[in-house]
Length: 137
Length: 81
Image (cartoon, rainbow over all chains, first blue to last red; front, top):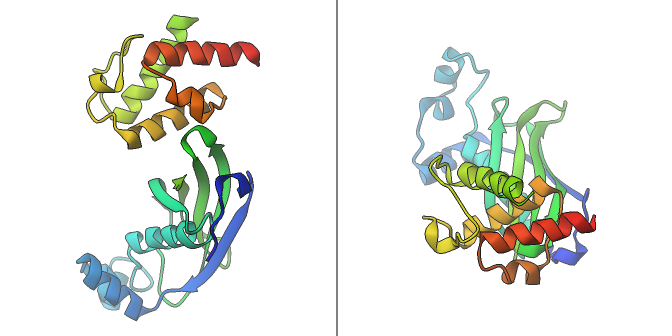
C-alpha cells in the first residue's frame, strides 16, 4: 500500500493496475448496490439491447478509480472529493481492463491534487475517463 | 481590474453552486452563500487557481476574510507574474 505525501507527488506522475471483472463480481456488485437491471445480470437481455455481453455497472468502474486513488496514487492518505467521469463504452466481464491515473494539477493551498483518470481495454478502447479531485490527508 | 476579477469569481460561484442568482461582492463571506462549506471551499479555491493560472499558499487562503480579500490577493499575485 502506497502513502504518498503531497510533496512527494509530481505533476505527470502515473500509476495503474489491471483487472478482470468476472460475472460473479457483477452479481456481487448488484447485491451490494441493489442495481439489478437485467443488462447487468442476464446475458440474453443484454444482447437484446445490442450489447455483446452482460454490462459491468458504471459505478463498479468508479469504484476501481477509487481503488487506484486509495491504494496507489496517492494511497493511504487520500480522500476522494469529486469525480467527473464520462462513460464512453460498455465494460464487459472477463476482459482485461487497465485503470490508470496521472497527476494533472497540484493545489497546495487546499492540499489537493487532480488526476486524469481512465479505464480502458488492452486495445486502448476507452471505457470511461475523466478527472478525480483528491484531498491529501 | 477589480470589477473584472469579481465578475470572473462570480462565474465560478454560479457554476459551482449551480445557482444563477448568486451575486457576490467584496463583503461576501461563506456565511452569505448557502452550502459554502469546507468541501465547497476546496472546490472553489481549485477553480479559482485554475481560472487565474496561479497558486495560493495555505496561509494566504487561511487569511482570507471575504471576497474582497480574495480579489486583492488575485491582483497581487497577477501583478507579481
